[in-house]
Image (cartoon, helix red, strand yellow):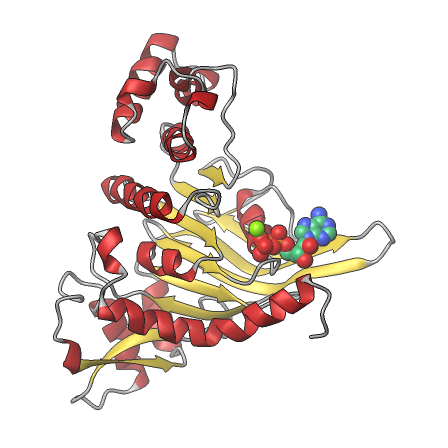
Length: 329
Ligand SMILES: Nc1ncnc2c1ncn2[C@@H]1O[C@H](COP(=O)(O)OP(=O)(O)O)[C@@H](O)[C@H]1O
Ligand SMILES: [Mg+2]
């Protein structure tokens, strides 16, 4: 079961009376290369309850990179109280799969990501990484957070090579790899600069190179493009997808931006407003890859998907806003 009581967005042909199981399978067929080019009038979007048989089929399709099972997270408060941020939650991210977690501000997205990162120990439940129980930091994962973690006193080249030198790679070899990564993120000419000499988007590119140079099998991203302007976000999303398609990693991508989530992901998981936030929807995104990130938002299919998910999300967003602003629920 993926994500508790979630339902799946599926594409269903108008002229075929399929049952729920077939619908589930068709969602996976539609992720094939011709999904976007399918004639618009022959498809419609329906939300169905997940069928147990289909769920099993989907789960076994690839190894589980991240497996959160019954993960519950509560914080002890200074006044001795207990704040239950995340209710028992199941979430699977398979090898090579790009999953976005979307929810209202303050609902528990970062908290859930931090549990997958091993930065936070759940109060109950288990976190499995490639099938192994996680205890301590998740060393299979690279992290990219909203705030970049570049060292201001080091050049761009040193910032990118440092994860390798720390891991014992000789300096020359590490620098050579760092140069290759700077080329991949379009910053070949910037290796000698210091972080303060870069734009926000360029710093993010350095951050991506710094994380990917270690070749982690999992990428954990928490609103990574949050501080960027809208256009740069789209460009960074495109770069991220290009790099990800070359070396598919399991990605757990936290964002409050539903458009960004749909444009990038294989699945979008939505969370309710907290406290005791839970997963209330789990949607397969049947948009073909490779995606031209700047154009995908213009596709009618994109709008249908957006409308469907937003309908489920908007009530929670309003609830979350009222809570974080001290208004009655
Ligand atoms: N260390 C902590 N102690 C107490 N409450 C916390 C702590 N960290 C987060 N929270 C609370 O948990 C909830 C979820 O936080 P967070 O995961 O950061 O939300 P999101 O990333 O979805 O915006 C919020 O209500 C937040 O105030
Ligand atoms: Mg957050």
